Amino acid sequence: MALTTNKSILDWLDEKIELVNPDKVLWIDGSEAQLEELRKEAVQTGEMIKLNEEKLPGCYLHRTKPNDVARVEDRTLICTPTEEEAGPTNHWKDPEECYKMLYDIARVTYQGRTMYVIPYSMGPVASPFSKIGIEITDSIYVVLNMAIMTRVGKEVLDCLGDSDEWIRGFHAKCDVDPEKRWIVQFPQDNTIISVNSAYGGNVLLGKKCFALRIASFLGKNEGWMAEHMLILGIENPQGETKYICAAFPSACGKTNLAMLIPPESYLKRGYKVFTVGDDISWIRKGPDGRLYAINPENGFFGVAPGTNEKSNFNALESTKKNTIFTNVALNLDDNTVWWERLTKERPANALDWKGNPWPIDSTENGAHPNSRFTAPTKNCPCLSPEFENPQGVPISAIIFGGRRAKLAPLVYQSRDWNHGVFVGSAMASETTAAAAGAVGVVRSDPMAMLPFCGYNMADYWGHWIEMGKKLGDKAPKIFNVNWFRKDDEGNFMWPGFGDNLRVLNWILKRCDGEVGAKETEIGFVPNAEDINIEGLEGEVSIDSLNDMLSVDKELWLEDTKRIEELYAKFNGRVPKELVESLETLKKNVQ
Ligand code: OXD
Ligand code: MN
Image (tube, rainbow, N blue to C red; front, side, top):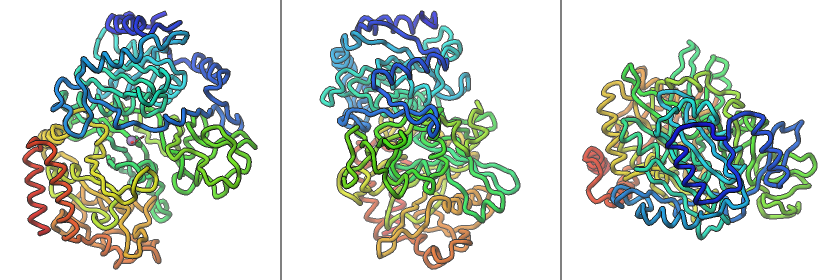
């Protein structure tokens, strides 16, 4: 039975049912009883493996096809009416042609299967920030993941009423054929279609497809922002909490920063850190003129390898119940999971992520490098009490970051909002061994949004500039951090992890005008003595801190060429404010 009388939904469903021809249609009502039925069914068919109920209560393991383990950026399309609207950093196809191609691929592929209809809300139901989506899928794995990552069920439909303001999401697993795999956004139609994949990033349509690609487009038209940013709160010993949003390309420790544990000396003084979000922020101007953010998600879809008690205690704790693991190794001795660096020793008796025996002398990984956990946010020990606040949290600072061995100082502050937008647009990171391809290659990734911006990126930068005008002197301050500076021997100079709080503290002091800084060619850089390194004796000295804060003009001049090349792609569409900032930087470092 349909859970709604909303005509726009029912009409759309009828069309899709006719196209894919399912055996039956099941509305997801969000009840625990229904989800439990689906879990049982998935275990019965082998789609999921139930893990040790004592050690990992409510947890399951799922394996995707080995050809389907990550997002596919070259098969991700933005189908705007013209190619120019999608811009040079997106892949584009004519919408009409693309619908036809996708419908031909998906036709009758639900035959013999169930169509699941998932009504979900991104953001707390009925928050002014929130948006509603309907995803149809032929995968129980998708249903169960969506039920963790978003707010699912009948109350979402009740909140929507008769409105047709909802995002259409259509997923069909088909044959999981990589040659016919497409992840497609139609921003003008509020529509997402994903075919031939069953991997989270491609099929949990609320996440990257909706909450970033479609939402960035909505945000531009409606005057708000959808960003690839974590949100964290820092409570000082006086009990005041300030919030920061931060964007990083992958492999820069974003989840770790979102859940950081303060160094011992800070804990003793009464500092606390709270996670509001680890991946996505929806941001808008609040009634008091400041910028407010919510995390539209309800779960963490985190990378498992490297997560351990030391690197990210809070993330690991989050995965200890009601979590779905994807493509990790299975420890056969106690029916639990394992991934690289979870513990020093690997389990002796285990299956690898493909479900094959994993001999103890194997040189292969047990878990896929992009294996994941889908964990409810409410499991997180440091989840912010403001997580469900429908009004969001006020943002004091925005941070951009990347992995730059020699270039960017540990931290610097932009001169003003527009210069900060320039800093974000110029973001780049060096590749690591975690991804395929050469290591240490600099890749531009403006605002960490390269694969996630749903329209022309130059116009997106323009939208940032416009937001700055609306906020005026209430705009958050914008900073850049680099936890990955290396010395001449190739060693990391900064300890990172919890000690990053020392840098965040400097940032918040700058926001409050409590500390000075040096004006340099690239922006405001801390005086070394203003970064607290008490307790880091033997690891960081004032001298090494001065090194980490130094600006090598030659390297910066070289980097301006990369930015120039990036801007050149946009055929004169880059906002003049950014072009001016680039010219200023060039002049300063010449
Ligand atoms: C993610 C990503 O999965 O950014 O969050 O790739
Ligand atoms: Mn992400």
